[in-house]
Amino acid sequence: MPFQTISEVEEFLRTARIVNVEAIPEGVTKPKKILLEAGDVQAHAKFGYHDFQGQGEKLADGTTEMYFQDSYKADLAAFVLSRLLGMEMVPPAITRQVEGQDGIVQIWIEGLTSYESWMQDGNTGQPASLYFQRQVKDMKTFDLLIRNIDRHSRNINWDNDWNLWLIDHTRSLAKDATLRKEKSFTGCSRDLFQAIRGLSKSEVGAALDPYLGNFEIKALLKRRDKLVKMIEGEIKKQGEDKILFNYGDAPPGLVISYDETAELAPHGVAVENAG
View 1 (tube, one colour):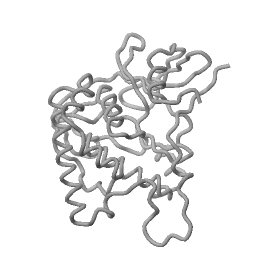
View 2 (cartoon, rainbow, N blue to C red; view 1 turned 135 degrees about the horizontal axis):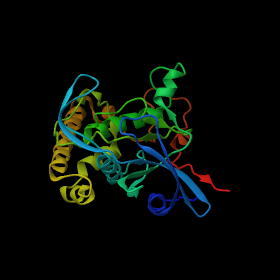
View 3 (tube, rainbow, N blue to C red; view 1 turned 90 degrees about the vertical axis):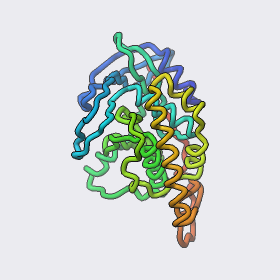
């Protein structure tokens, strides 16, 4: 695989030649799919450029968002924040101009299964993989932190190794400091909890200042404080082992034979070779 690090992916996204640009039929913000090429490596990426902020926007579920944004800048901020937290679920992304427009260029992970298509095949609930289910817990915790109001079955995707890939965070990280849908929290990994708790005002400000305003960053830090307090409360009520987990832990209950190594394959980026 030509990309060994996140930095290499970002450099490719930033400098590779744009070979083709095509419209993506789905999505209200009209993103585009672009083909990039550098040397003998080709890879697709998503280009998003929509940037809107408003107040009192009514959502599809009937609720109203006082502070609403639908912005590629929030999408970029979500990726940067995920890296601060040590997460590998959000595909690498950078800022770049495409056809004269500023926006986000995010690597396109090939060969994914969406939760929507999985359900259309007659499945219900979640895939049986314990590794997958634990990632979903971290996804929900991350969504609480960024106040993501647009997680749905089309932007929950996974690869053949059950690695979860999270996209479309344009409707997140607005100025609302409240936690949304706290009851969605059912636990998270110890690593993620410790990373959230350890976020400092200075590192968050330095990392996210290019994409978010002062009010959005302050709201994020307030949500962080509320989320940490909520998780600590659940630990106190239920016990740490009921709330926090390590990805290598065996499942609860009687285990006769267990090997999760196959499910712990590292997140990778699929690319195509030109030729």
